[in-house]
Image (cartoon, rainbow, N blue to C red; front, side, top):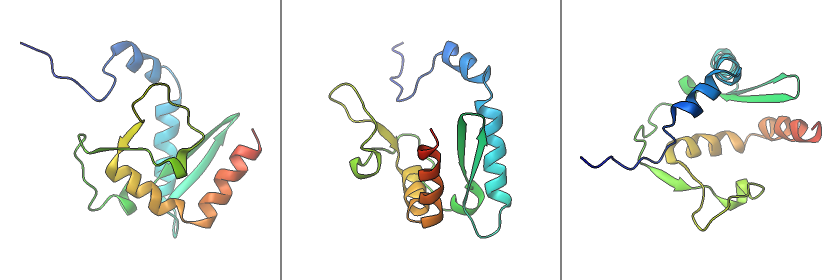
Amino acid sequence: MESEASSFESSETLAALVASTPLLEESWKVCGVADASVGCNFAVYRVGETAYVGFSGVKLGAGVDQSCRNLVPLPDELFSSLCVDGPDPAMVHAGLLHLFQSVYIDNLFRDQVSNIFMSI
């Protein structure tokens, strides 16, 4: 039986690495803050030199295509600073990109993200 090609890393090593860091726990916390906040669809949380930006899946997630196969290239105008080696563009889930773009137009969000990059 031929194995199915996956768009995502399926390595147990990578999963173990991510699980051994505070990334999942801290990300979950900041998404919870975004869910609980009134009048805002995101939250920014700093832990030392790391900044976590969480989005409310509860407030923004209604009607998002849940299919993992719905991938689109990252738009250059938003992510021009990302370097991707190779001829293929970096891909992202179309529904999540749409959610991000709906928050990105918020000036408060842009100001907070700018402050993160200025403090690095």
